[in-house]
Length: 494
Image 1 (spheres, rainbow, N blue to C red):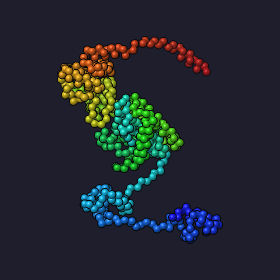
Image 2: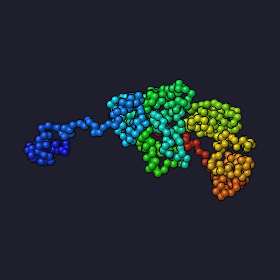
Image 3: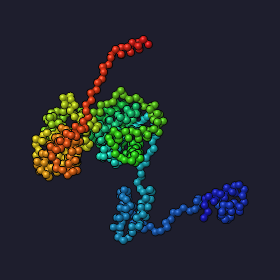
Image 4: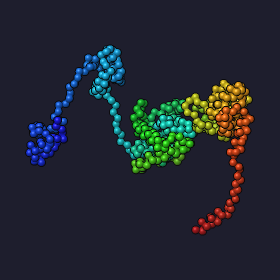
């Protein structure tokens, strides 16, 4: 069979003055064949008749009208579903190997007769005009802090022209997380773009009372920075396409860096944050030229940031707990029936009473969660040990797994008396040192020795005394203030 390459060579040789016989020989074809292609002026691929006929009988020809009716009724139906339906309707007529034939027919029907498909229109990005942001979950990367899985999100901010990006670690899609992440991004950028687009932010809305309240709060943030706000249409994530694609690339980059690092565990959250900062600096390094074009047309930041703290006033219940944003927290038992002021930050709650900061608690994610600290209630439990067994938050009163093992062992050894002993252990941990009590329990459990309160207390005392450094007296000599007078006189003389 003659190829297009041979015919091109034939034409080229003839154009150089070669004879037909010589040119055909050099193009490796028969002289009559060469004459035919020279007369037609077409390549072999252009001369072949197009394949428009079937090479075998269509097995679905007789039932196609039924299949087409199903497709016209709902074009979302899949070929596998239709094939299974045909096999049930016509038993023994269609074999499994004919599924591929039906899939090809459906593909042709969708491309020629099916419903019109949505077209995406490539946008022209203008420097300094548009920024986009959204939250993305990081749980699937398997990052751990101190050996424990760190469930978190990242608020991701991107400039659509230069693709400059930044992030803020968040624990939930709350309005506080949105505002803090947004402001962190602008102050790190050092300038303000004209417009900002987000998704529907339903999670952030649900953390407030209603949509109108969210709209009012978010508009206040945008007004403070002089920006226009936009949100995508319902079910149209492609409208926020830059940030969606940036999510994928950012998380892929994090995953690859973790592979190079060799492990996914970090000693502290700060260490993990520094790891992400280094990665972001590396990713933004190649975007500086376009970023400078954006910065030239952006407007200046306002004089200060907005206050992203939410203040709530609640009354401590008779259970020694407070209810904040649909979650339950324990506070010091001395605050029972008192009114306290709660300052809600992105990750923490600060408890104030009579203008004094009493405590700082980690903010919980989601709804109907609880944070009960044994230090707040242990004194009451020691006085009422019978309440511990059926306490609704009992499982939160085991600081480590060793405390749980100790409780089970004490209860097995001494019954209700063992429960009281465990509560005294908790009280010892609250008053002395939880880590020291945990270490003492580990020694007893590893050696299969009985747990005796007096012995644990003695071990804790020895551990604390050994670990406590000797007090060092530091003496700082008083500064002679006449030195400053001399300095000022010299400056005045110059």
